[in-house]
Image (cartoon, rainbow, N blue to C red; front, top):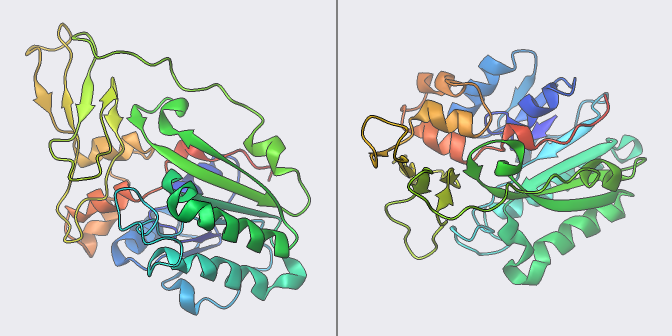
Length: 285
């Protein structure tokens, strides 16, 4: 089951390992429209703050809680900020059924959470897990390690009651593709404007996809195409929303159901806020 489920990045990844979503909690109406269309067998709940209990037969709780207060590109207010402070709801709901805690908990967030407030966010989260009897492990992984041409680092923290999470989360490490210098023979991804906290550039890939503005204005990266592969060498293009979905590991038009309740431009925000599908560790059914 998923808290802060977004458009189902965790759920689609875990479905590839044989899992089925039972309950999905998401406050955004556009994202809920996507979840309803893509996971018709799951019960939907709108607000984590009003969720009282988890399904008794659930095996995994996933939670990509809001990153706005922990992100380098956000407010950096810390783990107690208005948005990221909702992490406490994960443990409120989890401990509501303390006599039958879920076997696994899988949490995702931005890597800057390890630095803001000297790592206080991680300290609080792992202390809460240990209080409930969980063992835990975490690592920072990049979408590029999974064959996706997007440079996107995220922290994944896996906790378990009975298994050693290190054996699952840390068992394989193929590493990042070898770094390459910019070249006329390679594509080059970048953003036109970066503000005061840039997310950088990427060779033969795009930099981290952004959620866009709070009023729904998309902020896609640009790509300088390589010479010799296209009719117009050196042409600069902008990925479409369908391209962005693929860059996150989703099939094209995955977020299209959101257009029933939100403007098309809002799909960029849903994709930019999502968990990359191919990140998910393989957990035994």
